[in-house]
Length: 237
Length: 313
Image (cartoon, rainbow over all chains, first blue to last red; front, side, top):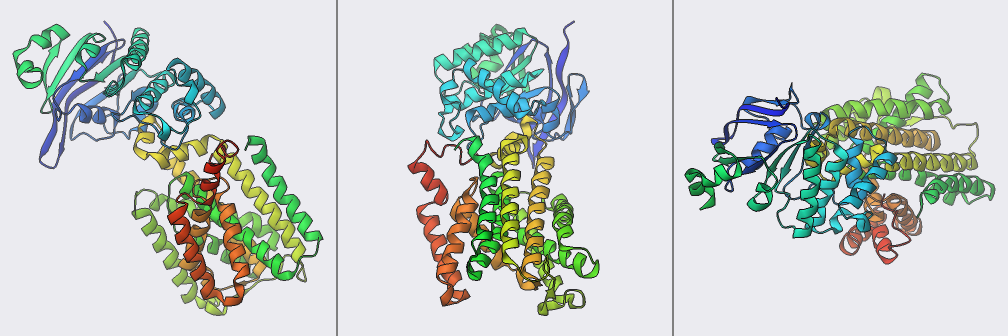
């Protein structure tokens, strides 16, 4: 049986009276890619925030590679092999592209020089070599999202959570992203990817989890969930 | 500027200190330069904390004052030489800064300036109130580093301390810590999510910059030789902040430019009296904020982007 790298059980989170995550059970195996889809406000990003430690859950547990990380600060799961990208790109505005990427290697224990050398290679892979020394503030939205992918290459995680990586990016960049994800997935990295670009993400994933109102509305293969009447009503229609 | 230039800057300051000590400057100019080193250490270290790590602390002048009064305590009550205090006080103030950071750095946003402001205020009140120890506003008197008053010694020492500051600054900014600090400054949540131990980095930045403030205070005490609670005023803190901001916050040589600008103005308008100096500097600060938002050095670096590409980091 394949190794489970991420598992949540009964995960719940409320802000005041607003129950944003209402009991999510979720499993991700090594080398598996699960698409997380659902209408706006379904709780997709909040779910990633809970796993990554940005939010502390009110109930439930989170296991990362077999170890409990439920109430830990976000830097701890990150150091234990969890990678997370942000919806609007996670670049540090005044740092150069190469410095932005090198940080992902430095938190893994690399020295600055070594991390910057690896970052240079990762930037070449995503096609950002010409702008490696530019401050991230001067990059376009799509380029900032590619910084996340260069970081992903350096971070060498066990689990990667990607939050709408393709929103607002052109087809060529989407293809670069697809190739990196496929390569890392084949090496055993588990991916949970939020996306509204269903053809793109369905082309990559083995399984789809549909969230609505903080709960799992449906789960299964892309074909199964696409045919599910509840999903069609809540999201696809 | 290349990395090599950054490494030459400390040498330049040591050479300048030596050179100036030999040419027999007028006392008023020598005093201006020596005290400028005090402000360079303060504005420079505050820039590392606020401009590079994004932590806006107003305890800096309080930490320098602690360094100065600690120096007085060690020399007067402890019988130590002033030279020893230049080593001991940076370490002691680093610990004090670390202790303050343990409390103050747990908060974010406007709360950090508030807590550190309160610390400085309380410390100022203590210095004035504990007059049996501090001699209140009458002040404490310290002997000079060597008998007699030889300004050339302080010019050399000032050059060395300024050089030392730039060595520490290069080590920080070009090393791992500097990059982690800047990541926290730009976006703390994302840095945390990437695995950066936010609190440890902030404490490290706080302690190192506190050590520099402690060194500045000890240098001040050993040079000026008279300590009064007025050393710790929010006006002085504003002065240090103004130097960093006018020069260019978050730029390696911003505070240096700020110190040069403000201390030069002070020199040329000194005939008008201290109050007018402050009014003039405030006016200039307003102009800089209006026309050179990121400071004078940012403006220059936009005029010459290629030559100045490495000024910021």
